[in-house]
Amino acid sequence: MARTNPLQFMQQVRAETSKVVWPTRRETLVTTVMVFALATLTAIFFFLVDLLIRTGLSGLLGLF
Image (cartoon, rainbow, N blue to C red):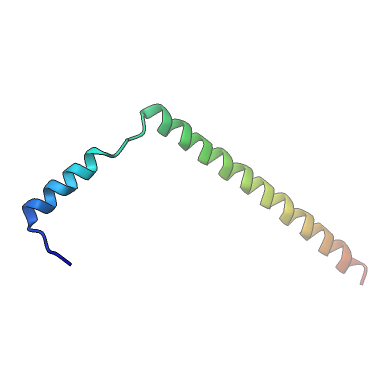
């Protein structure tokens, strides 16, 4: 594999970085809100599943 000197490497890094399309402030905000909303919905879902399983097992073990 060919080695490049540090100057060429930095020039290549700058060229590649200039191709990056950074998200706008609005896109970042919307994505952040969606992550928090989906994390909250997931937490509620697993809480309800846990509650259902706990209630079912308590009822089942209460019969014995």
